[in-house]
Length: 124
Image 1 (cartoon, rainbow, N blue to C red):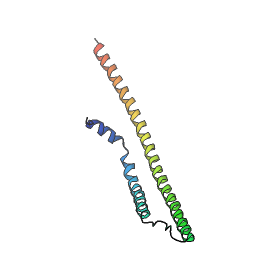
Image 2: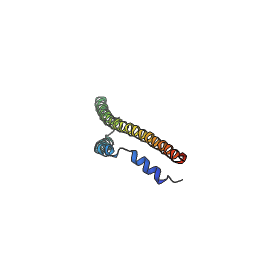
Image 3: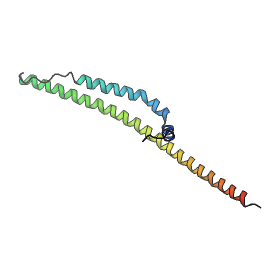
Image 4: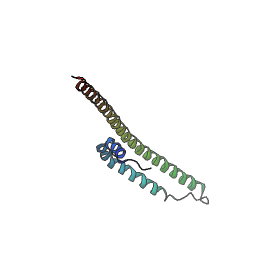
């Protein structure tokens, strides 16, 4: 079942596009950093089980350090994205409040119209 065009238009008009477009460069940068990290991690060689124990421990320590650094970087990216999501949620709440006020204004206008029609019909 297709979604009616009026519904799509109404929903699309409620999205704060100015804020979405303003946040797009930050989202793009975060996505590039995350992709660069994930592709870089694939090139890490495994620890050689036949190597000396000291070399194995050094390799494992290096891998742990890289993992901790990656986790910190990803936490920064997630925090930035969460901040952007919070800003968009705030804007959506403001839009919802504005829509509610407009709905009540429309209801009041319709009520006044019905009263005016009743007065016009009931006058001799």
